[in-house]
Image 1 (cartoon, protein in one colour):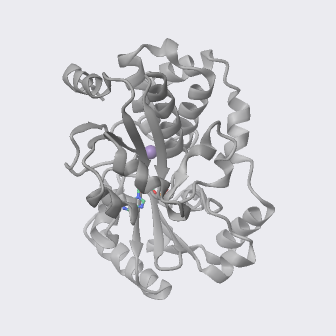
Image 2 (image 1 turned 135 degrees about the vertical axis):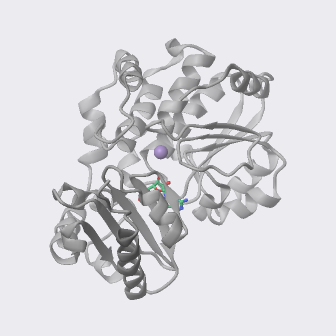
Image 3 (image 1 turned 30 degrees about the horizontal axis):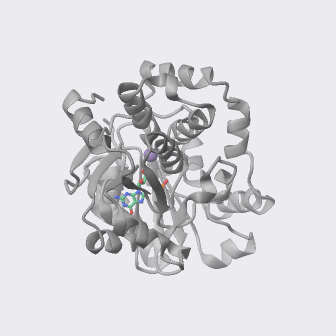
Length: 345
Ligand code: 5GP
Ligand code: MN
């Protein structure tokens, strides 16, 4: 990951004049990285004297509710007063955080297509970003968007401006996007950044507890049910999937965020190299994909589910029924395996 002086100079020029109207957008189903990077970057821009509004397409998971200033984030889906659209309309500058294409904003992307002439800056770590941005900080080799925001702060101002709440925001994104520091891109520079964050006095066990040990009883029971009753294996036990329909979710008082981590669990089985989760929403099925090593679920999601993401974590959508979606997955896995997509590498 290399941020060039030219990119930094362009960003500096955009932010030179204080009092600019700035909007920060993060992706649909915002996660710890989307929210953490939004909150930290908002803090930086406010301190530079800008007016900043954070917008997310739909609600963030409840286990992030404790984050300082999160209640100020506008959820587009339930924003009846039109505050999000108004902020976008008056924006001079829009930052897109933790996603690679405006289409990932779902309905909110319509507002962005017609109601603004603001300059757009991308700060993101997903593969294959689209090019409709005026300035791009796109680093697929960064483990999180929060790490990119950290690096930007370091280069623009020096890390001494990082306060404890900012360090908490950045830590949450770094922790969640790396699966609590267990996935790829765990570079020495990331650990140096973490040391700087730790220096601000953040309570790391507490942050871990807030994010990972704050679920409901219903979620714990749904997890047991999903693994025992719904997880299926394919391809000699090397590929897994599970699905949940609305009736099953209701039975366990499902809330947004409750299925977080389910798809990863199948990868705790030694032979499983790829795992999928199919979650019914009102109008479509959301697909989450995870893999190990060289198995490329970004490619799989793009080819078979009109989605994308990272090599080992991707997603997509289906507008077919659950049965049809699963049948399509089983067929696609077969084709992918025949073409060598599951190895040996
Ligand atoms: P998750 O399974 O956690 O929802 O998503 C895993 C990764 O895939 C995330 O990095 C997310 O941004 C990406 N992703 C999820 N759904 C989609 C999708 O519909 N389209 C694209 N392009 N990426 C997605
Ligand atoms: Mn991310």
